[in-house]
Image (cartoon, rainbow, N blue to C red):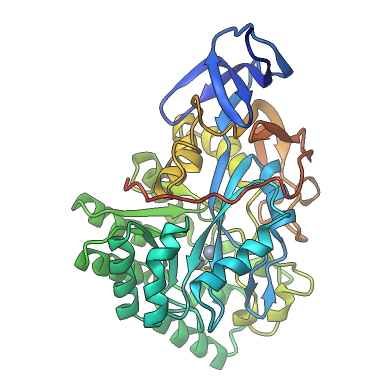
Length: 463
Ligand code: DUC
Ligand code: ZN
Ligand code: ZN
């Protein structure tokens, strides 16, 4: 007798990184078990996806949930942040476990595992952000990779977090030797330090000076330096939140020469720009993040970088802080504004409802940069990042006709604003399925906090 499935998603237009076709998807025990046209088997539940697009659940490989930062803590924890992710069509997050001073890497993983356990509504993994790279810490890297944390982040800026170039080089070498991947936050510490002090002395304290103190060249110089170090030790490298055309030029140069250098950008660099910092009444603080928003002339090159494959992924750097009580810490001086902005829930809707609609991305490219490539680069493919037999049943269903204006009140992010207020979209997620269960429907979360599982990640694929 034919088995009864848990769920069948019927008649949807399936989109993967390579194909678009109509088929049914039958799901059992959290996995995709069978795919085909007009399946006649029975299921406990049938979802009619006729006229809708069915995509692999989004994978956001850059989030900061429950993170102590800038004298406060990011306002989404693993419960609220992953509920917001789910409602926006994201079914896996890879967060940054930041090494506290004097903690070992093993202790760091325990701290972040505790933050997520019993709370996360979608699956999660961790990059380990190393802030204090002593020899003993370096020696832990192989075991940490083995335990399923196959990527590390190093900051080239931020007092208390930044590592020096020799440390970065050593980390690149040992990580590569053990089959892991280093990610860098690339900005030149000294340039920023000099400009911040200069603006302070001139009493230039408003949010716009956050951007002016972190110029494009401060990023692209650091990107170039990180690439050079990766080249010197023959290691792969992933550049997080690449924001401007000058950095893209460095990335392209390295990739064209055959080096295994990869990068992500974020929706804020595609849809927002430096003028946002000039909004009245301290509203510019909403966009204070690092790297900062750039002039409009970086947007087209970044879209083109995605379309052509020079940039492999779009992640969010979701790091929300309330305007009230958090961002306002920097009313008297821009450098005291906690760096970060929300975006975990709006990434997929923006890229679909504006990126695809405005022909910046094709549908298959959208899947590639939001799910397939992140899964490949960070060791989760083909369990995640595609729609195929035996893959996790993580799906997002978009209604391509749904008109939706983004406004704070429809979102689930635990913060008092969205940077995308008033954005008009055509196409919006109407259902999110994770491990075969419907977890978001018609704009509401219907899943369970704590249902998400830790994903042990394997070696990166170099794209
Ligand atoms: N940039 C931010 O804006 N926030 C958190 C960390 C980072 O690199
Ligand atoms: Zn960063
Ligand atoms: Zn970040």
